Amino acid sequence: MAFPSFSDLKKISPRKSLLIALCLFVSIPALAKKKEPLSSWLNREKAVAVKRMFANISPKGGALGAVAASPSKQNPDYWYHWIRDAAITMNELVYRLEGFETPEERQIETQMLKNYAAFSRLNQKSKAKTGLGEPKFNMNGSPFNGPWARPQNDGPALRAITFLHWASLLEKAGDQKSVLNLYDPKFPQNSLIGKDLDYISTHWKEPCYDLWEESFGFHFFTQVLERKALLKGSRLAQKLGDFPRALFYKNEAKSLELEISKHWNSGRGFIMPTVNQTNMRYKNSGLDSSVILAVLMGNTHDGFFSPEDDRVLATALALENVFKKIYPINRQRKALGIAIGRYPEDRYNGTNVFKPDNGNPWVLNTEAFSQFYWTLAADYSKKGSIALTPRNLSFFKALPLKHKFVSALKPGEVLRAPDPLFQILIGALRRKGDSFMAVVRRYANPDGTLSEQIDRKTGRMVSAQNLTWNYAGFLSQDRARH
Ligand code: NOJ
Ligand code: NOJ
Image (cartoon, rainbow, N blue to C red; front, side, top):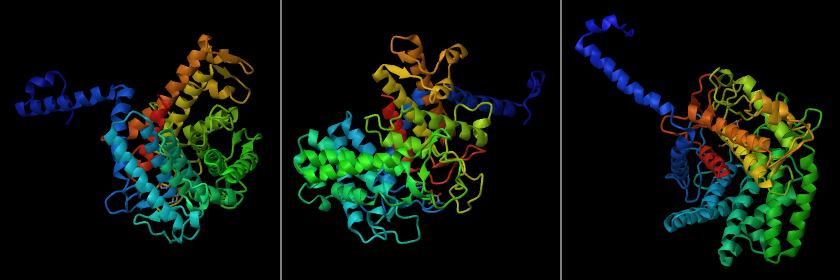
């Protein structure tokens, strides 16, 4: 129906005018909705994230304690317990236990963790093809024996980090018995955490598949998480009097540091995801947003490849620049921010058809960039200073800032808290952090549910729906804001 001009209005039948009135009635609330502040949407979305994440933990049709990567059973089939996705998800549950919750909520979540611990023990003990390096299990707990990219050694590291996190909470609460259930200092090889730590310390020198289940070699993401698990594990072993292992884990973590540092490529000016990669010749830009996920999940707050490391900042900027260029939705005039993918050469769009330019932006990576910027804002505020270096200067200059502030930024300068420019940069970091969530909001389904990917051209949600990791990722970025 063509829209009538004013002079036409008189001629309009009552039925038509009713229709027009109806159109206006429907479109006005739609317009009003667009103006909802981001913070208000984030609040509403948090409830969706919690609900949908919980729905995938011990879901109907799966064993108690199993975490489905997504309820999607075909195109793609993600109805499996992935060690990585499950550990990342359950770690968010531990963070919730740290917060203000009602006793009922705490009880439910503690029970979920207990079930997950029991399920994980079964995974560890089962005769899976690559033992603890096995990336995924059937939802009934039996090993998945089909062809797959295995082993993936980030799994045991992430799982250990989650249970070490929980153990630290139990310890603070004085529940020593539960702590000893997770790590037995006499027989660490017989406990949940001990098994993973022993596996990591004896396998980190071997190549494996990466977190995207594709590239074979030595991965920054895997190694950074292995190091964190070993350091945290060493501390717990020490506390519980298991001194030989405390020392062993710590030494292995130190040796890993040397390997992790090899990922910095000074010629290219960014951190490479993989060294000695033996497959995927087409994956050659050296850019991969798993580097940002690694520094967030692997943060040990000791300055080792921390988010504010200038090598990390340079990498983040290089990633944004490439994704801005290759995804049509990022090139739109009205783009609210940059949708982030896994890596530029990605060919996986959720189907079995792999071809160049198939790769899409991912929700969990876009959320991670938001978390990254909010983490930077919080860390710099705490520290009270920002050091501008030749390596990070372009990163800061790319922040949403007025031109006069951009040109005021000089390498070698240290901006301190009282300096107004310091506060301006903190504000810009937060605004930039929000821009990534504005992108997630724009492409989320109207009911707030999130699929794995955002179609690079149409912006439609594609691939696995209700991806559990998306909701955990939402909660991670939410934590970084507080
Ligand atoms: C290939 C994808 O690239 C990889 O990341 C994914 O895990 C598997 N297919 C399974 O869907
Ligand atoms: C594909 C991703 O590449 C991988 O990291 C993830 O574990 C699986 N999907 C399951 O979500």
